[in-house]
Image (cartoon, rainbow, N blue to C red):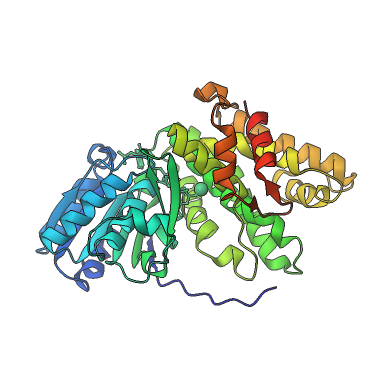
Length: 390
Ligand code: NZQ
Ligand code: ZN
């Protein structure tokens, strides 16, 4: 177990009647609020009206930035930063999923720079310690952005999708009402659920080296919750317990608790971000296609016990069998979860992706070096994994 410092200042209001606390949370920063949202789902499901009605009567001055794209663009972030400068914005309020929250974080950081341009911060991997405060109202259980220090911003001109991190990007407060995710399409529920699952899995293997069972078991509990509740949320979109379990799992998976004392790793994520950067696909779907192939590629006598343990703890695979057999059954179970239970298509070809850019994507994914994890992956390894997904 490594030394660690854990500090997460995000105040989470979880449940049905918590939005009433939104005005008090915003007021401490000022009256001028930039309301950031996506392509309009919050207008259809009534969340926009709920937020507006609780803010307008309290005298807040709202300026809006709408139309944040899934896989948010740096150009949209820069538009938001320009508004912050012009309208003297005090706090950025994101109402939406990970894309909207990430865009709000990018805006908050860029607004504090002289030229209001987020891309140099992203490109130079500057750790953000100064940003406008961000408050999030979450509508999609998926990315963990509501409680983490990261934003992922895309530059479609250069086919780059890169994480921007910083302590100042952690939302000051997050409102998590599971009912706000009732209106999610089944496909987004599936993709978001698998994103949560993979946030834990990407780090799970490192934990095997540490004599730190408590964290391993926490990780397994979160993955088990996703496997249990995602299909229920897909069949019964208004099942509160299912939505609540997924929403809190989303936050727990990436708020630092599950990897405190561990190495943080993100091999599948690094590979997936290239897919979204080149082909603008849905993040969780890309992860679902990659993950079983990644596990297959990793499998050998050394990794089999860890993969088998995942299977026993999360998918009910038998314990008393040879690790190699157990590991193979586990990979099958992960695959079934992705492509049967969640109903996601299983190949990159079905998303219109060919091998045209695999070599350059593989190089970007590992930053020209290698990806760490239970096994180190070179760009040649990554390219082979992409090919297994065709
Ligand atoms: O744009 P709107 O109209 O809001 O519609 C969205 C969008 O079309 C819709 N949606 C969200 N909540 C809804 C809803 N529709 C109906 N009812 C609701 N309650 O769902 C679609 C997808 O939304 P998006 O925000 O893009 O999804 P998600 O939350 O999965 O976010 C994905 C982005 O987050 C990044 C991903 O790479 C991707 O860019 N990630 C951010 C991370 C972080 N900040 O730490 C880590 C993750 O690994 C991930 O990389
Ligand atoms: Zn993710």
